[in-house]
Image (cartoon, rainbow over all chains, first blue to last red; front, side, top):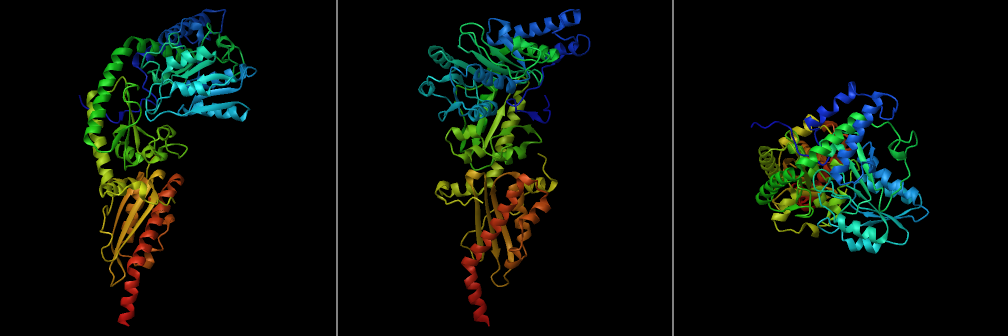
Amino acid sequence: MALKFPIFMDSHSTTPVDPRVLEAMLPYFTEKFGHPGSRNHPFGWEAEAAADKAREQVARLIGARDPKEVVFTSGGTEAINLAIKGVAEMYREKGTHIVTLAIEQRAGLDVCKRLERQGFQATYIPVGPDGLVDVEEIRKAITDKTILISVMFANNEIGTIQPVAEIGKLAKEKGIIFHTDATQAVGKIPVDVETMGIDLLSTTAHMIYGPKGVGALYVRRKNPRVRIAPILDGGGHERGMRSGTVPVPLVVGFGKAAEICGTVLAEEGARLRALRDKLQDKILSSLDEAYLNGHPEKRLPHNLNISFAYVEGESVLMGLNKEVALASGSACTSATLEPSYVIAALGVGSELAHSSIRFGLHRFTTEEEVEYVGDRTVQVVTRLREMSPLYELAKEGVDIKSIQWKAS
Amino acid sequence: MAYSDKVIDHYNNPRNVGSFPKEAPGVGTGLVGAPECGDVMKLQIKVNVDTGLIEDARFKTFGCGSAIASSSLATEWLKGKSVDEAAKIKNTDIVNELKLPPVKIHCSVLAEDAIKAALADYRDKWGKKEAAAGAAAS
């Protein structure tokens, strides 16, 4: 099969909508356009039924017993905001301390920082060189003021999967609410809020081949019943937790996407893992000093993150960007002009953070694409190393860390 | 971010990539930047000690496409200039030529630093001999 360019391999940023998802959505724009809150006519009933079905589909994918536990939001960021701020406001009398990870996604970190400015305390637990948190570190951080443990399910850069069930157990033991940002994990690996002891879970549709602009927060109703204060005031939709008209076409798409993921999850995961391993082997066997970031096994099957010593990430992307869409932890590719705090948190040194490249495979990735991307990556890195003063120094046997660098 | 055609051209066809032996006659080497900042440039000039003109230049850069382009352009501009003329190359000249956006201005600053460092190293190593040669001739 002929390759089509550019090849999309940035599936931790978003995924394409599955055609079956789009097909399910379309009638809800024009024919079935009712407001699910309209209780007195068929347009409303039809819309409400569609939203409820979607709620069930999402609930099933994450193992929620009751579809009412699924609260639709505008996406992952809003779900994370609602979870953390909602708990902080609701349980402020009980305590003001939150335990989270240093490598949480931006939304999680920034909400905690805002809460700190408002008188809360947050502990940002570091991770090991493989990106995994030590659950004992979480245990040690808990105080009698801790009201929330918020730990991401799988990291968006390195794909490392945290010991969520263990953390859920700890949270239960201590009587603390446990939130997980599962935007990268849901639909890709098994997620079960019941067996894993999750009280709040954030997810988003566009990571699972659904539309952008819709996500959900799972809010446990039993054992324990979790209460959250809403961020938006208004008509009291979504059981009062998220006012605002439910975007029926989007939630229908989300539901369909969740249903498909539930059906194909195991098979798709195995296929992508095999392709990912092939890509990884190709790159690591062809280049010296290319380092895998994250845990070698406990990671998302479609994730690959590699640091190529002596070359800068943006320059690698630039060599490929007409052909392949990838991401880098380099400062030059970030809005903050800082290198990836996730890679830096692994303790590898910030020069390797600048050199990191993230590959994200997805449902429509083909073997030919993987072969092409592997070959081209090796070529581009090799070319850039030929013009890298650091590679030259290293080949001369100079220890780069021994040089007194003068940053301009 | 979209790159200018000139940045893309220098990235795809970098001019004067390579190295001179550091101790070769008339060679001045500048090594600036820091790996943890994501930019390191090595820029070298080879000066004809008799004429005082830069005969050749080389670079190697660890950095983004704009950093590679800035140093590649610098080596082009250095060739044929006298050491004094070379010292007048400003980072703003590089910004204008490559149409660098504000977030990439530091790449041009680093290139100017690399030029200055190479010139200083040249003067340090060979300037005295040049002056001595001049004194002997008069």
